[in-house]
Image 1 (tube, one colour):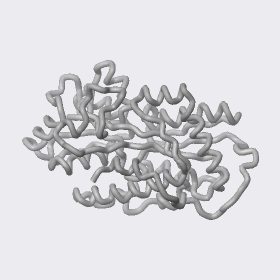
Image 2: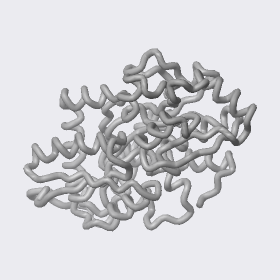
Image 3: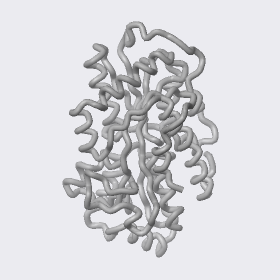
Image 4: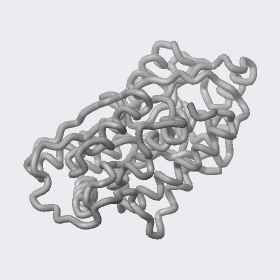
Length: 325
């Protein structure tokens, strides 16, 4: 099972998850200030991407676009804000693939992740990576496996919240490696990095983007990336596959979503704006400098990836004995 394969399945025609109104004119959209909800803390990869989009949207549309961080309950609070908002395109969400994790992890949510969100576009794809304190005895993923087998259920790792991409990638790794570790959920990558640096965690699993500054300054040490190939930003850091787990790969993604009943014409305009912004040289450079790749898609493609990732995560969580909460 390779979760990264989800990103290769961009074909066919699927429902966007929007229902109700089927046609509408965009009129003078946007007609008032807009809000982009981020389910993670400031400094996270989702926050960075959301702010890139908000800045350029404000410039091109002449309306203030505010980024609103709501890091709580694995993205459930943020999701409820968006799904209950007026469906006119003025309230959006930029989030990670953790949105699929919440759907897989929680038995009851205040919304239906597939039906109550309209997919706008994927924004970027990127690797997660494993980091340790500079003085840690862990030098490779083989060391993690060896230590976890010597001390079953004792190693601690931090991730960006229950159901997040970093949580999923870590438990997927545990399943493939045949080990058990203790997961410690945080509200975002910055907190994971802080506690990894201090030695409170044996290791952290974080999106590469928020960790790049600390890796480059030597405050934490990168052990491995989760993708099938080495990342352009840290070419000397091996993949999981090169570290004792051949075939292991997971690529995280980030996407923009809106309430499900936003008129298709507005979704189309938002989709075109995201694609325009991600094509700007300065935006592309900033995203790539944080080890991610801009990746705009159609709303249908984004919805397909979301639906398939929910199914894949449910299978992995079930296989390792994690029951919906």
